[in-house]
Length: 175
Figure 1 (cartoon, helix red, strand yellow):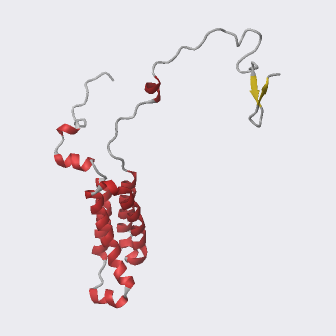
Figure 2: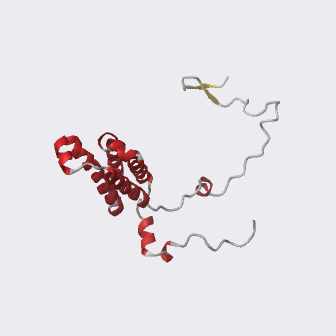
Figure 3: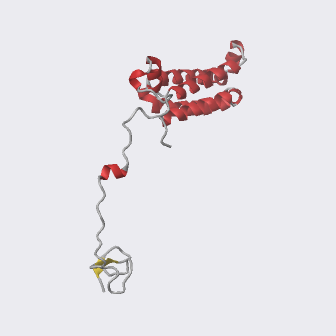
C-alpha cells in the first residue's frame, strides 16, 4: 500500500511523441473503425461494374454507402471538430448498408461502422480534471450541538417548525 510508485505510468503530454498527441487529440479509434467498416463492405462486394449498372440505383447504392463510410471515417480523423455530425451520419449510413451491401458486409462492416460512429459520438476533447463536490464547497462546517431536539421528549424531526407546507405546497402556520 505504501510502496514505491510504478515507473511505467502514463507520460505527460509534453513528453509524448507527435503521433501520440495527434491520436489523443481526436476520436481516432472511432474514425478508424468506421473507415475499416466501409472498406470491409467494399472488399466483400463482388459485383462487376456492368452488373451494378444493369441493376440500377440499388447497385449504385451498394457501392455508394460504403464509400461514404470510408469518407466519413477519414473526415472524423482529419476534421474532428464536426465529429457529432459525422458520427450521426455514419450510424445512419452504416445501418443503410444492411439493405444495400450484402447485409452490411456480412454484419462485420455494419458492426464496425456503428461501433466506430458511437465511439466518435461519445468522445470528448481533453478537459480539465473534474473537481469533486467536496473540494468545490471548501472546508466542512461543524454541526450545532445544542441538544434542543432531545430536551422535551422529542426526537429527530418530530419538532414542529414555524411553518409547515401543505400537500399543495402552500405554507401555513404550525399547529
